[in-house]
Image (cartoon, rainbow over all chains, first blue to last red; front, side, top):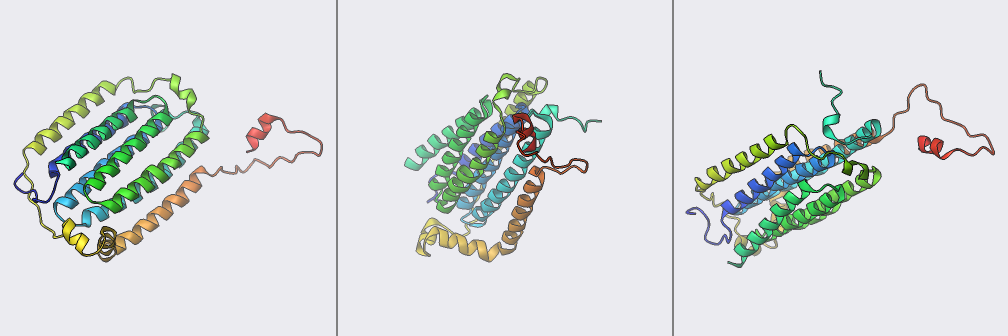
Length: 108
Length: 195
């Protein structure tokens, strides 16, 4: 690692590997599971993977913009959780199920 | 050296928790494991000296957002779904193979890259000399990102209003509110309908 600052204890690639692993776990959960809640959890996992990336690079480049951006990702995650859960509630009320492949009424 | 060992431990726990989240049948168990993942991510933020974000991660993510999930899970009766099939029958193996393929791709690409630090100057020494990390963070945040911050507040407001509208039960035009005669006792089913 030629570019890593001497005072950075953890190499920046480690963050990237961790973030890639978490992101892929989230993506796999999103594609594989049928339960709407698990799909939403997978989404949160993926957003967290992005946050790890941003924080790692923020430390690596010695620039606080990455850390600031994490706050926006968290705000969007909160908004997404609120709207997603509202949609889940409305769907459950109308269809009595939460399995995502059963919501196919708009299919042509 | 200690940091490296701790990083590996927390990273391994986070990934293991992530795999646990997407394999649990019970949604509440999945949620608890997800909170565990968030705590590990917060620990990694601590190791990176992003203290403010670590605390926000615990407070907002593991605290607020997950409590929201818990409330909705308790609201809906999800136990009945544990008997159903949990994975997409047709696409699960394709999805799994694709995920492993993309992960391999990530690893191969990352192994070939050497990053060069841009040396922005905000080293931990500089930050601790300028006061505490939260102060420097706040200075950078409100000097450079004031407009996005205001936009984010509007986004949150829209999400709040949207969530209320979505959950609110619509009053259909034909439906009239039922009036109970004095002395008449509503059946439990009718009460259920009313609420």
